[in-house]
Length: 124
Image (cartoon, rainbow, N blue to C red; front, side, top):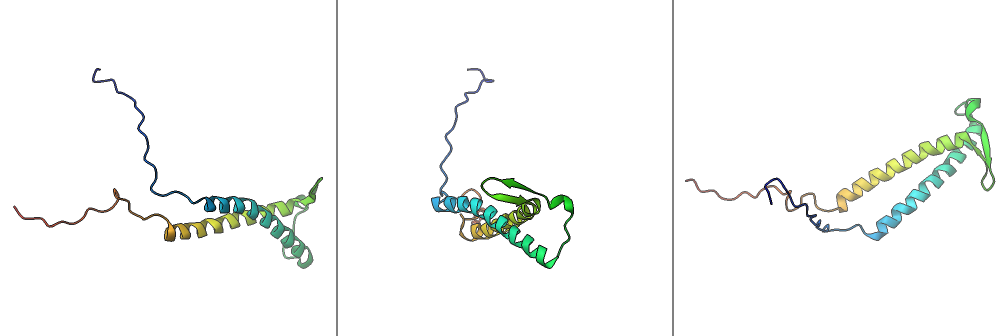
């Protein structure tokens, strides 16, 4: 072999010392389904309360609706408010997850990240 050729052997990656527990994956899937449903339900309730109380005046362009055969009449304002509530819900979930991960997650320093130990040096 010449000095300019390299053997491109693929090195196997080391397995992680920890793995995500399957229950956390299940909880994540439940939240991905549950948060949009809760957001839409909250949007419908907020829009019904807005119609009674008159908190915010809505322009005519976004008060339209369309009909789905199984779900019935869906208003554009409900979808807009549901999207806002979904963003808030997923944001709260992210903050809670980050605090939980910080408390329960793997250690901050690994064996290669730890600062060097201070040893006794003798003057020469």
